Length: 305
Image 1 (cartoon, one colour):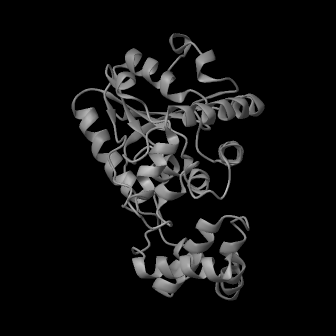
Image 2 (cartoon, rainbow, N blue to C red):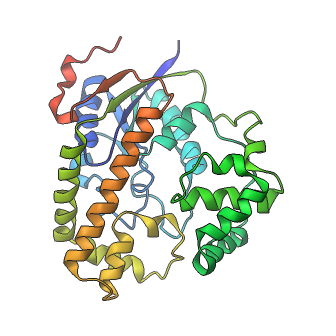
């Protein structure tokens, strides 16, 4: 009989963590992080990572366990998550994945294009090109060898634009050709039950705005100051976490605190919008979809069949 993996998904700042704890108590579950930024130990405040007091009664895994100097990615997350899932099931607990990074969930379920690792030197080269010549320079190059992959990304998605260029530069093979191969699978013989929360976006924005102000009050500026003291490569994922670039500019006296807050709120609202769009267009099978916040749903009223 297949075991079940539960997934609590939806945009940031909706209250998924609190709901997952209630669900874990109901089904004898443990919580596994599926948020791409909450894995980093350097950022607790800015990533809204659950606190020790919030996690003391239910086991939480894969939170704050990666050093920011590591270039963590979806493949590494899938490998780590599968280990925890199997361990959880052997101990007769139910695994509950919680987070807003839809790509992680999609990859865990559907697998990943099996592309060889990109050398760090090529990643640095693409970063240098963007910095010195701008993303349009890369886009024009990509048009010459993989225009089909370009059609699948927006012009402002610098990360994916770099990825297309890096894959071709590293392997000599187009991303669109790699996609013709069979995906590398991470886990099989499990049922996935996805609980998707897509509440009113305007209310979601309001929560994002107030939450960012609270993050500043709780010490987000000091948190970023400590991160900057490590002198990490600015292309690392942890350095691109929402709020880090904005607070960095404030600390460099390039903007004042009010501007920092405005920009931090805006980038997070933009992320919420992208998350709504991603989930609404996702082909993943959704077990339960709610147009409310998790706090508005009584977990005891949910039928699991």
